[in-house]
Length: 330
Ligand SMILES: [Zn+2]
Ligand SMILES: [Zn+2]
Ligand SMILES: [Zn+2]
Image (tube, rainbow, N blue to C red; front, side, top):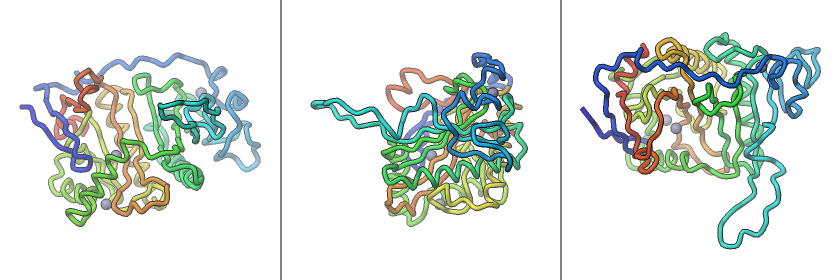
C-alpha cells in the first residue's frame, strides 16, 4: 500500500511505500567503523588539547587550566571550518553572486572518554551538554552578523562524521538556510490561516491517537512525523510553545536529555547501533519576530541512501511507515 503524505509544516510530499513484513533485524546493518585512532592520536582526548585551536569554553574542574586536561565538556573552533570569523577576502565575481563565508564553526567535545556515545552518557552529563548548547547559542547569536545558529550531531561513518570521539558541531551562519525558511514559511501560513501554531496543533493530534508517539514525558514528545522522510525519523517536540531553543528552561533541559537518550538507545537496541544525524531547528536570531515558530529537534538513523529520484525531485520514498517505525522501536 503506497501513500503520498504531506508534511503539515512545509507542505512537502513524501511517498510511504512500505516493504511488507520487514522485520527489525533486517534493518540492522553492520556500521562501517571510522578510521581507528588511539587515544594518544585523538585530538579530542585529554592530553591532546594542543591538537585543537584554543578552547572558547569548557566545563572543567575549578583548579584546572584552559587547554589542559581536567575538563568534562570542551568547546573549540573547528580546525577545518566551513565558516570563519576571518574569511578569506573575495576576488571579483563578475556576474555570479558570492559572499565571504563569515560565521562560526565550533566543535563541542562531549566527554573526555574517547568511546562514550550519547546513549551511554548519564542523563546529568547530557543535561550539561544541552546547557553548553544553550550557552553557545546565546553567545554566537548575539553577534549582529549572525542570522542563524545550527546545532548538529553526526554519529558514525554514514552520518558524515570524520572522528569517532563523540562531539557536536555548532554553526553560526550569516544567512537563514533554505530548509529552515521552508519551515518558517509553512508555520507562518498555518498560523495566519488557522490562528494557531502548526507544531502545537501537531502535538495535540499526535497525543490524541498516540500511534506515532515513541516516548513522552512532562515537557517533550518524541514522535515519528506523519510524513516521515526517512525510516525511523523522530521529532523531539517541546510541549511548551516557544520559537527559540535558547529559551529552554532548566526543568525542560532534563526532560530533553532524557528524551534524546531514550531515542538513541532505541536506535542502538533495535537497529544495531546505526549511524545517525541529529539537529535542532530554532528561530533565526536576525531580530525579526518569529512568534509563530516552534523550536524542535529532528533525528534519524542513516540506514537508507538517497537515489536519483529523491535527489532530483526532493520527494523522499520511505519504505517504513512512521506507525510501523514506532512499533519496531518500542
Ligand atoms: Zn578521543
Ligand atoms: Zn507551538
Ligand atoms: Zn524542523
